[in-house]
Image (cartoon, rainbow, N blue to C red; front, side, top):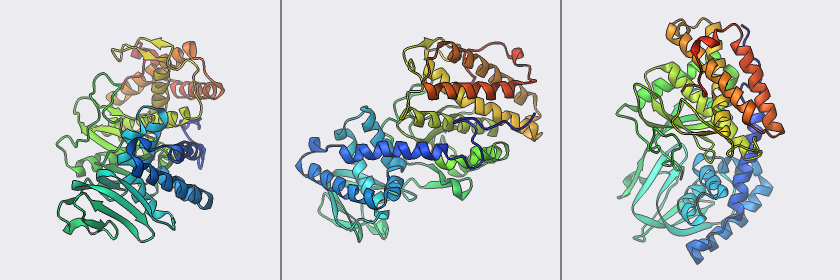
Length: 417
């Protein structure tokens, strides 16, 4: 079988920039929220500080929009902004932790004035460095051309850059990140999570996504993820290259030797939650699965995809709860590229593809995709772009299923996994 052809929002063509464009547009949604949000609920000083920050950022947007969008796209900035944009959390709940992280991130942007935020906080996240916690808390943070300064509740002041907090009593750096894959990906395993929704879980077998290495070392996690990424790079090189526009941070949520659980959020593009599993194929599938969710989640900020996304429901033997038709589409959209991954490994006669376990899994995923697509095509009312998405998924699935004994897997309403 030939290598699978490119498919909209699933298998990119070499050099394709669809995801780059989607990413930019969603960052613009987040930027609009940042430039219009009110901090009046946090008091006079915080509101005045927010107004000043917004005026300064409007000037930056006119001079260097790309640099500003890069800041807005950082996980610790974008996720809280999109949570507010979605209406799930109020500015009063989000801004106290968001603004310190924003001001630290803005140190890379040319701002020729001092920006002061006066509201209590006790931690700040520095991209690529980690989380700085402040015992007793802080009451203000100042960004100016010389750097970032913090005033503690005690009245003591210190500068964040150059980074020299090691000698400061009660100021601690923790939770480093670990680079993954090729440098161009800018992907990391991180122990820092600022997603306000991380403990809200849709899967019935999981309770939130608390950060946990599951008793394993960071090195074990990095090794397992690198092995998974190497498999993906071998099988789907263009999909692997596109990771730089889809996934920035992998967050560990425990160790599961018998099953794998993962999660992603529409409001947190670029963040994937994963449990550690001893099988590299399972880890690679999970990363493909959740990254695909991220692609479709990005699209839904710009187009509803299905007009009856959450009003048409179906039963599922794979999960005990009913699934909206959008849930079925999310599953199929995640698992058709998993099938492409299986197909490419088999075409290369990769050692991992030679076992009966691999073949059984390959057929089970194909069968689930066939049934999931049948449900979507029977029940979904797609928009124009949704119709294109479904049509191309069907074409890719039919290509991948050609010559495979899909009927031997029995039936399943949803792809397994």
